[in-house]
Length: 166
Image 1 (cartoon, rainbow, N blue to C red):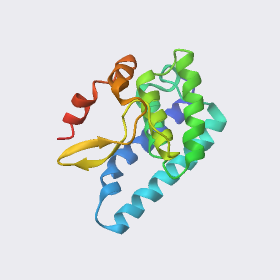
Image 2 (image 1 turned 90 degrees about the vertical axis):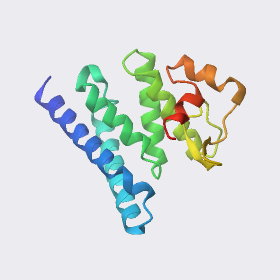
Image 3 (image 1 turned 30 degrees about the horizontal axis):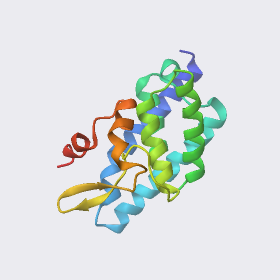
Image 4 (image 1 turned 60 degrees about the horizontal axis):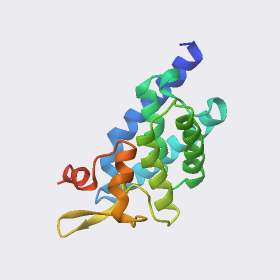
């Protein structure tokens, strides 16, 4: 790994760790904590956009699995910067087509972008809320075939997936 790529990997890994550490603030009852989460995700998304300009999609073979996962997580949480999410999605689609990134992560990002665009998701990965104690997905196209599509990208059936939130 060149020093430039090592620096990129270290930066992405640090941003990913900061994202995970601040994630509980997203659903805080304290508006100041929610604002801190929004500012953090916006800052990270801005930086990810710059890194995408400079390096393209950071794939594990180049930056390591942890840094690649961090880039995906930052893109996932860039909900208020749909342009960054869409760009990350396009670059990740290309990386998956080349066999350099995972279809599972791509499915989660695709669903996130679709939900943020107000469209039906494909894989049922995005949860709208909880009804009668059970997680409910955002609207999903052809829900009867959702688990089939999930299996095709390595995501457990919806029932198993939501059981982990109970």
